[in-house]
Length: 389
Image (cartoon, rainbow, N blue to C red):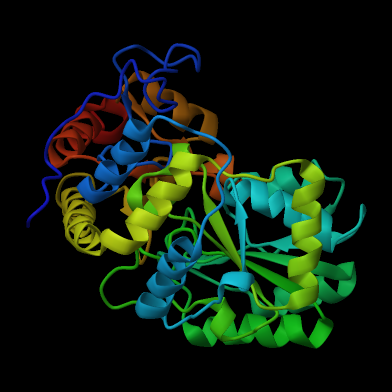
């Protein structure tokens, strides 16, 4: 492996949400943060070099991307996923969540129903409710340690609630499913039948593990809206750049007009430089990173199977986030969270953060050096409520 992911680089004192707000969030000072979905690795060296060139230039005026930017984005998704977009089919935004909020306002009216599949990434809930839309849930079915789509419930609720928009999480955060083409075809058939607009959040698409394949929803339906960003893939979330793919001209014009009304016309200068550089030069780094993360996931799976078998990891088909089932301990979510924080001294995401369907689960971020992950597992093993001592 050419790139080193074992180096532990302190993020304290950098205004890191994960590390520098421990006290503000009411956590003990000796807790190990393993929650928010960013990585504890520097961005690819080529990206850092290109950012440095921009910094040394010293002028940070208004910036718009040229063909080189759009070509880098388009080539990445064409080569990796077989999905080609033109320059005019890309709508820039400062982040996927920002874009989803604009999409909700652009494509629906107050009171309209929007469908999500729970448990799911928590901003999906707030951007629907905060914009005065009706939230409709299609809970995923959990059985045999895996999640499945309830297609009958999906179609029934679309009809009953006159759903206008469906927010799909693909790959799914937090349950780690990589939806098969057959599953996506099933969703598409139902949405097409009732005129439901599909918005597919594919921000984790570059983290799909062996035996699974990411299918871009845009390959199934040219009227779909595909939300992407380099933020998860290359650890660039703080630079605020995302790319929304829309082939449908009317939908693209509606979203562009809504973003214009927000007053946000120009993206972060360094974010644009980093995005272009990452999609141009970051492939080899990502390949090494993927191998490292797969080994981290296997480490957790093997450790739990051998040492803490009551904790059941849901198979991680995609993302670097592991969804852990603690239901065998019979604890309510609040008590599970408290004991994890106070006894294990680990800060994981509470399962109910992703909706009531997450009761009894915790989300673990494994995008960290292996020594940090080993420390986390050792803390789990020492926690009295998990070992029964």
